[in-house]
Image (cartoon, rainbow, N blue to C red; front, side):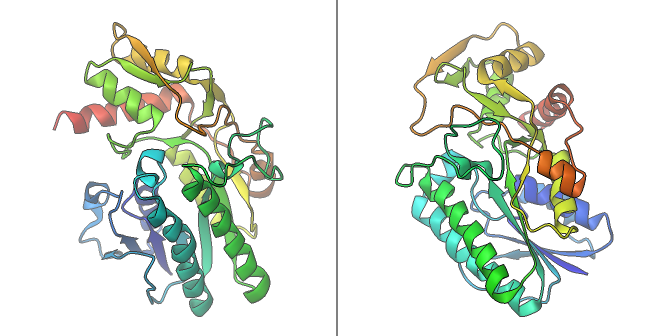
Length: 309
């Protein structure tokens, strides 16, 4: 069986490729390295079941494949806001191109959607039936609304062309291979702490997130693709934590003498993020297994290694 992973040079994409390669099947890794990193896949170069294709998915591509794992898109606000028009094009035109390829090849397609489609939610936890509260003209809308149209395209292609789709709404994820310049809270805190800099909290720190370790997420993605479930399906860790508490945990693990400073909260930054994963438990028998303490230890060790090089 042949697989195509778009965004395969990225944080989650590279871990997913490792999972597929471990089954003995062939993987095309497609990435333009807008935010991906060659170091994430260096260990795979030369592997008989791996081929890297440097390509921008806003341009069509034709390959003989059986499964498409569509993860290509900047996922950090820092990165997707850098070129919001490009982000919108990736979500619409890129997804359209992958759906056309799936249609031509009669392939299953997985879409990495996001918890961001819920916006700044007015309910907690967020279930898949919640329609969201998104500022459709805000600075985050290129990503939030981009993923909404990507989901819409998937379900329209399913209804019109009967292609096999699998849509996951991915919540905050962390682990090894995150970029030190990712701009998201866990990587920010760890890099600042290792560098002996004060930890920066945006807002009052009372806002919450729910963090899922990357291995758990990849397990959920894999189970969804090999199920009959179309989705959308929330994949994330339901254990909610405030940013204040997270900062203190990371500071204690790395350098307890560091100060914590506060800066203004970015516009449209969600105040709550907590997934309901009851549907994932029921439909694909999935729930995260790695707790935050263990996951942070592994992530901190990774950052210590790469920052010392």
